Structures are given as structure tokens and as C-alpha cells.
Amino acid sequence: MAGGWVEERQPTEEPVRDTTPNTLCQADDTVQDIPMSEDLSYHPESSSIAEQATAGCGYLQALLTQIEHYPTTGGEYLEAIFTHREAFYNHPPGHRSCARGFSDIAYAVEQRAWRADREADAEAAVAFRHEAWVIAASL
Image 1 (tube, rainbow, N blue to C red):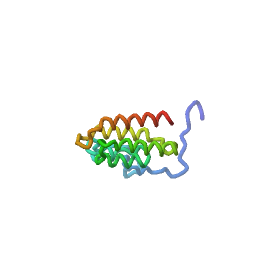
Image 2: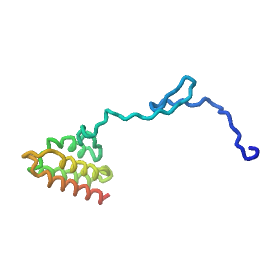
Image 3: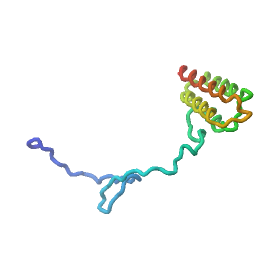
Image 4: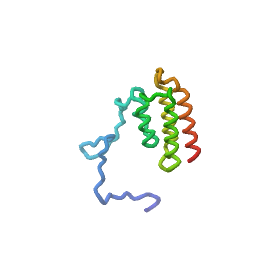
């Protein structure tokens, strides 16, 4: 280094070529960035809540995938909460993301259309959300 200038060094090995889809290699082996295009195949409003969520243990994920066919009038949601609570207290580390899973289930229940076998959806959503709070406070 002379007079405050930095000497330019020549690379000693072959440069790594970038083959990611967001770059364009030109004929002279230079890499040019190109802007990412919008992914037109992703439409969150057209996919169901169950397809988007991955939070929670396997039990909650299975429950969420079946939420469209899950009745709440007979109190089935209470059985699901108590079944999960027993599994949670037996092995808490396996349920770190279950608070989010219960919140996702509550949201899915709130968003589905009314039917006669879903009269208790509002109560079920409150119960699922409460269980999410209980789990979050326990971890």
C-alpha cells in the first residue's frame, strides 16, 4: 500500500458462477441481476386456511386440515382441547408452536360459513384462542 491507495489484487482461483434463477449470465461470463417477477401462482385468498398453516403439533395440524368438516354444536372442540392439553403436559417441548396452532384454528373457525352443526363456532373460537394463551403462558 503506497500513499493511502489500496492495491488491486488479481483473483487466484476461478470465480464461482451464480446459477440462481434471479441472475442472468451473459456471453462474457458476467452476472447481471434481474428483478424478481411477481409469483402469479400464489393467491392466499383462494387457498384455504388449512393449506397455509403449519404451526402446531401433528394433532393440531390434523385438526386444522379437517376444520371444514368439524362440528362444534356438540362440544367436540372441548374434547380436542382436553386431548391436546394432556399431550402438552406430558411433553411440553414437543408443543412449542401449538399456541400459534390454536390461534390458527380459532381464526379458521371464525371464518367458516354458518351451518346448523356449527352453532357454537363463536364459543369454540374463544375456547381455542384461550387455549393458545394458556399454552403461550406455560412455555
